[in-house]
Length: 547
Image 1 (cartoon, helix red, strand yellow):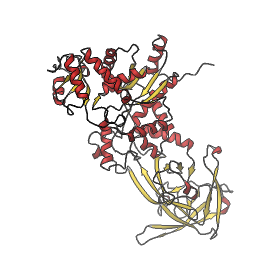
Image 2 (image 1 turned 30 degrees about the horizontal axis):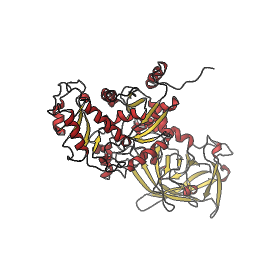
Image 3 (image 1 turned 90 degrees about the horizontal axis):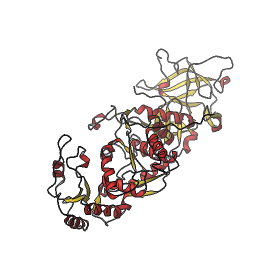
Image 4 (image 1 turned 135 degrees about the horizontal axis):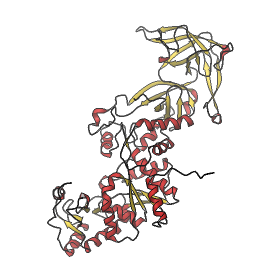
């Protein structure tokens, strides 16, 4: 029998070529997020690539928090990142911090100054931008570029001692202001920031820039493959220059892949933070957000997210993935794993007039039609039940097979019932249906072989639990919300229903428990639930309403 191989991609192909050529004898990757916000669905792609690459080759993958910008970072984000990675099912070999290498990175900066490859510059941020040039015009040298090694060493040490205010001086790499790659035009590698760091406290008032700290952290850590998204491709020459100047013998190889772009959502940390701070959403874990904590709270299983990432694949070409693919993966996962239950979201009372008053009976119902190993549950049936308001029409339209006067339907796992009459209030709203049942149809089949075209879900008035149900949908109603995202909010992204009724067995549902409500969709119990007040989120409808 032929050996079954895992699907390949261009990253694996590069690594296979290196291994065949004897370039590397070991594989080490890392996932290096900055702890300045919550991870989103795009990060899930990077997480899967980093961890699965190491797993495929029997290597290691570390979590490294690139905490070089203390003004925007927080321990809250560190803990959230760790929780998200665990939820996706991955385990890092070591949890590290770029800040752990600050002494080493600082020594590397000193080394560059001593080699004449770095200098202290007094230009303002605006002036540095003006001197940098454009994509079609070269930059021009800073007037401070030719400072002596001794002067640069003195100024950099005085910067470190806290002698100068923020923004007054920076340390820049001395490369080439005429380079066609703007990233190589004497980039800033250290800046002054009198800010307390969540790991190092007040030890430092100078901090390395990402493009300097990142390659040095990779090299010091022993990373063999720096896997990153495509926007870092133009940074690769600087990445390699830094490592080469410091003299590492076996530098990591940077390989870029296309990031995950998903329509109908916003992943920009700036925009997400705006929505949170302005109360547009309830928090970073609002179930309409595509943060990993948000989709987890909404009820998306980790297996569905990983399936989605696998279906998207790894490529070098940027593209936009349709949100419907993610929802399809969620339906596939929950369709196989979620137990079934009955819930009536907009209840309409039904009285079965020929069912004995005061009587109840217990029906045994399977939890999943395709998985008998998931067992059964008991559901109470009684004279008074509730069905959906939409399941009755006094004057039915063509091909309407649910309840209307004279029509017979099946109550799921119970009996055939026939509508005989209905009651209305003073405004003409239907308030109650009257039906009769056929006691010979218990279980949902008629002994005389007659057929009905409608099967309805229901709950018993004798054993049901009230709940608040939150119907979530996409946060935006256009594919690309853009900078004017607020103008494109979907007003139906959250519809809250109070007074919903669920079968009695769900009163013990715990946050995170997931169910398929028959004919409704997939739902999970929310963290806002209490023993007195059950709250459920719609994870995804049974079928997409988006075209």
